[in-house]
Length: 313
Length: 319
Image 1: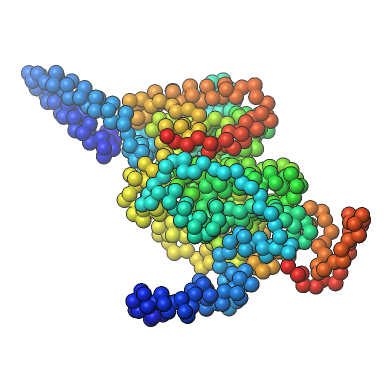
Image 2 (image 1 turned 180 degrees about the vertical axis):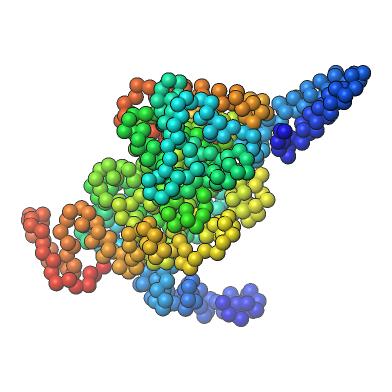
């Protein structure tokens, strides 16, 4: 912000803001501080166009970029009990939920969707860090179970985009029980012989890392994401030792054998398309526009890839 | 010497006075203080009963962490014969924070495992205060897979503040080890029963407690986060642990009401630390009862039943 917003009295301030700068037109990069125009940033999927820093992205935005033509259908998630513990800290849990719903326009911290990626039917579940830190409560468990059901039913692979500060403390033991419940969801997909791919994004911590996020057939991480069980602050307090540069970041985990690949967000669609088709025993994806297939022979011999061009969406 | 908790101060004073009177009487046989000492002691007993009937959630946390409470190895030594500890994860190290091996429970060969906290400074350090590293969970996975191969029931005794938050533990995949251990529990084709004997600390506990039947000692606690940790995050003040403990609903009684645990094992008056052998004996009976409930179930029934149990959690709210 600038001196106007700091010093000019509120009424005048609002007058200025309304006329000059709706504040969501520009976004400041969390890492390099560069001011980024919102359209450029959205086009780059919330990756800083100046330094490449990957900022948070909602599952909805991510799915628009991931699925063919941005088209997907939401998978319904059975509703969980609201506030079974009647939890209250400084604020009621029910009020925190209302705030989060108002702020994000979403119902909960995980969105499940079905669509195609390079023509391959795929189920995706994405955790929404903007919704109470993506925290894993009963909804997230239910969402993963619904995602697993949808994947098994459609014989489709399941991709989970993890992003969470950990468990939803306000659901107490029931949030902890989502570790086994989500593990059951993973087991259902694996039992059906279908791929389960995890994309770890910033941050993936606590009980989320210690359950479904570490049980993938393939673990992909976005660059420089914090991925850990215990966060760096907790460790520093416990062992009173400064931690090495890049500790618990994607590249560090790659070096320590915990993840398979580090992939930029802009390349994720192509990456997932390739890996999923390889795991499903399918021929390579066809890039670019195809002429519409003749109605009857749609499922005939695999189509040979044309000269790879940039995919259209 | 008995260790008293801060809220047991009143009891400690009464019992101390009674003790003093008796000591004086021993030195001077003419003093007639017997009756007075008896009276003080019965008042102390009454206070203890009242206190333990109405323990707050935070007080239960303190009882669950009491240094004199029986720990996993105390249970194993008393309830199992032919205990044969097995060591190592075959990858990196032996983790002394998780003990386990083959044993016989009431004539039946089993695999038993538990988090061991240690009982004095030296053993506490050796056991890392019951906080396992990835190697501990990987050893547990190995033992569960062995139990699966030989159709041996698995019994786990849970008592940990949580998995160890350390640099090496993180580098070697603490999260992955916990996830795989939970997965191994769920994949077991043999019965698995768990007892939370003290502290059930978050993911470090669930990794060994994803079981067909789960029991808790009356004053044990089981929580997604420690009250201190919760207070510092949600209240931004670690001193608010009493409020946090209350809000988290981490007591055996609340967990029973939520359908997360199947039974609560009554502790001796004043907690397991006041009569360890009675607490251990009752736990033995509870383990036997839980195993017999699972007798005759096929491998697939056991697996499906375990899944169903966890899938149903979250349908009951607290009053």
